[in-house]
Length: 190
Image 1: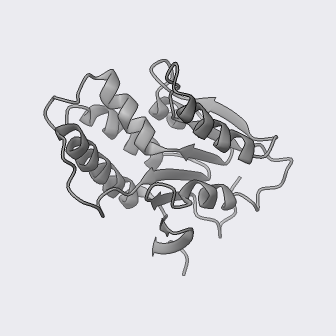
Image 2: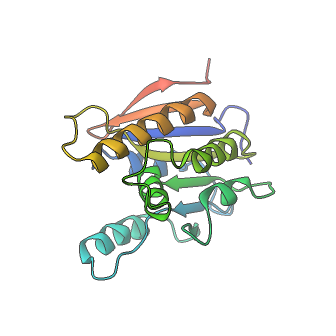
Image 3: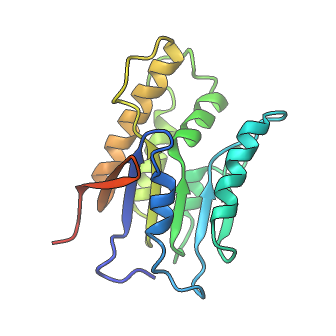
């Protein structure tokens, strides 16, 4: 589904409210309306959290109507979605920070040693490396700020940083979005 001049795998990094999701969505503007696009949502809903529900809704209404949505979670691991037999439609995963949070929750690993969910991370990186279509991954870049005060904050920062570094190795392109502006960190283009 992807032409030779379009990168197969792109990692889009950025801080909170940087425009990383909108940028990743815009990278699919060249996909014709008759080609299905798969949006893989990693955010989980929390009963009574209306602010979180509103954020999810903002993302939903911004997507074109012909895009399909797959929601991952405990019953449908992200690595399984990406490793399923292809060919795959153009796929956007938003975002790996909420995926990581869910994985740490599911493993009850917030107070466990770093690397407790290494098997899940390994499975995701392998699925990304083997993905046979156009894939965009959105992930938070959290290593630019102060050291988090809490252990869970430091754990998340360390785990997402390690995940981002591993994914950058297997992705064709890596982009950092700052204040809505994309900065290319790695490109497969000549």
